[in-house]
Length: 473
Image 1 (cartoon, rainbow, N blue to C red):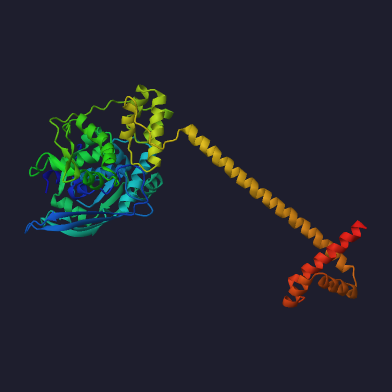
Image 2: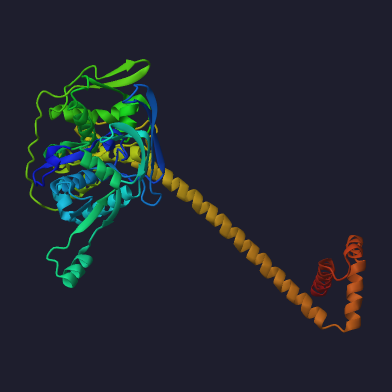
C-alpha cells in the first residue's frame, strides 16, 4: 500500500483510485443529463497469466431521478478522497462538513455550492457499476468481475439537524459522514491509488482539463508506459473524459481548450503533430511538460458579482471578473448568445469554450442555422399571431354554434308551447299531417317507428311551418 496513505495528514495532497480514472463515469459538462440511463465501455485486456486477450466490459447504470453525475460531481469525489486520505484510510466511513469540501475544492462559501455538494452525493450514490474482466484487483493482481456502487450510505447534516444533534447529545461539532463501498475501500487498502496534488488541480480552470490532467498524471508516472502516450481520439473523449459520441472534428474542437490550458501551465508539451491518423483512426499524442508552472491565484475582493459576471459564472466561466474588466460588453454578450444557442442544440460546451470564444480576436462563429435574437423574436411573433388567429377562429366557431343552439332552443320552445295548447285529438291530427307532409319522412318512420327521433323532427319542422304561415298572415 502507498505509504502516504497510512498516516493522517492535512496537507494539500489528495488521492485518485486508479480503476475509476480509466473510465469516466461523469459527464464532460455540468449540465445534468437525465436522458442517459446507462453506458457501456468495452475493450480487451491481456491476461496477467497466459498473456491471451480477454473481453473487458464496464456497464454503468445511472439514477433515473438524479441523472448522470456531472464534471463538478467528479471534483466533489476528489474531495472525498482527500478527506479519506487525511483520515489515514482507517475506515470506509468518513466524517466531514460541507465547508471542508468547499475549502478543499476552493469553492466559494455560498448556498449554491452547498447544494451542489448534496446533488453530487445523490447522483454518485445513484450509480451502479458492473465490471466484467474490467476491475483490477490489486491484491490478486488480476482483472476480475465485480458489481458495486461507489458509496453505500451518507448522512448530510443541514443547519437544523446540526443544531438538534448538538442540543440533544451535547456534541460540540456534529459532523456529516459517508461510507465507501467495501469493494472500493479494499482497493484503497491494497494501494491501488495515486497521489493527486490538490493545489495543481485547483489552479486548472476547465473541468475537462482537470480530468485530463488526472488521467495523464496516472500514465506519465507509470515507468512502464512508453512516451508519447498515444490514444484513439474517440476513446480519450468518450471513455476517459465523458464526452458523448461525435465527429472527430467536433471532438478536437471540444478538447483543444483543455489541452491548451495544460500546455500553458507546463503539464504538457506543445505538439504540432498532436492529432494524427493511424490505421484509419484519429489518434492523440501527449508528452509531459518540462516544468509545471503553478498558476498564482490573485486574491480578489469578496464582492457581489455584476450582472454580466453572474451570467458568465452561471456558465462555469471561472475568470469572469477578468473577462468583464478586459473585453467590451457587446463582445461578451455575443459569445454568450453563441454559447447558449449551441448548448440548446445539444453541443457539450464548457466554460473554457466560452472563455476562449470571448478571448478570440474575431470570436467563434455561429452555427449555420443560427438565428439572431431579433430573428427569433420575429419568428416568435409570427407564431404568436398564428396562434391568436387560430384561437379567434375557434372562438368564432364556438360563438356561432352557441347562437345556433340558442336559436334552436327558442324554436323548440315555440313548438312545445304550440303543442301544449292543443287537445289530444288536435295534437294527433298535427302529427298525422306531419307524417303525410313528406314521403321521405313516411319511409323513415315506417322503418324506425313513430317513437323515434325522426318523428320528433318531422313534427318540429311541420309546426314551425304552420307558425311561420300564421306569422306571415
